[in-house]
Figure 1 (cartoon, rainbow, N blue to C red):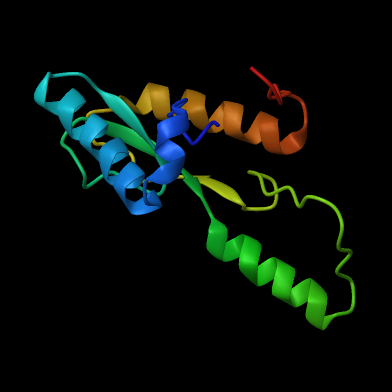
Figure 2: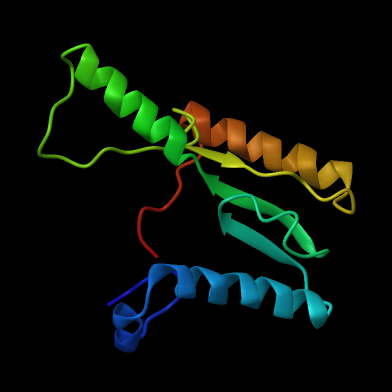
Length: 125
């Protein structure tokens, strides 16, 4: 079973909150070791000093858009919904002031290319 960063079958028997706490522990441990990291799932900027930014899953947007499609009679069940940069289902968290402006500009360039469809992100590793 694969759960986030964890490939451990025994993790399936542990509460999700415990796994999330462990992920935060990784970010904090990296910080303690002087290693920079990137948060995932939610904005983890305030978790440690050395978080560059975070890839934020906008679950709020997904829920809102899904409920709206149900209310409008447009919801089609039986398939996966895809939330991404283009439909605001993903975003970038707060960016650490230590990140040079040139890097932020480069990231924003790639982000816009992904939204425009000119840069394709792999769907599998």
